[in-house]
Length: 152
Image 1: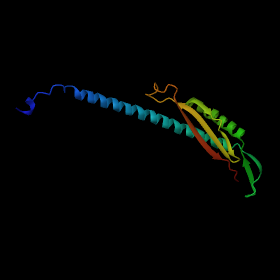
Image 2: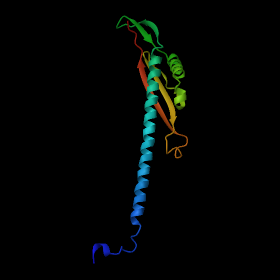
Image 3: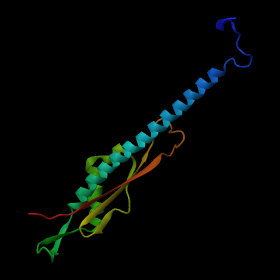
Image 4: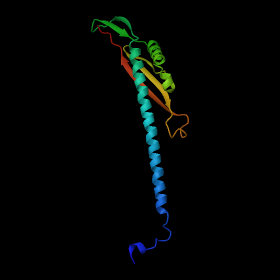
């Protein structure tokens, strides 16, 4: 009896098909998860870029209030109201609200000290392929700090 003359064992027909279907499903699941995670990561980096620009704009909203005792030069001073106002104006000028879902300026935005502007932005990401699992989206936040500097 040759190798090709053997009959397949009973009960083993179609087992490879189940294995192939299982591997395909696992592969599709991995692709969906990697795509969703990548989309969230990329949107977070975009939001961080906008937060950096808003923080730089807010750091330029300082006022000069007195002389720095150590350097003997005028010292820039930031307040939370001007930081939040400058960040909001930057977001309007840049059109960031059109690029992000539910973009908002977090209440933590303000001056952490007289020379540092902190901007905290929040948004919602709707990742592809798995959007039906998280219909409300995935919230993301980005924080950026910038220091006011007065130079000649």
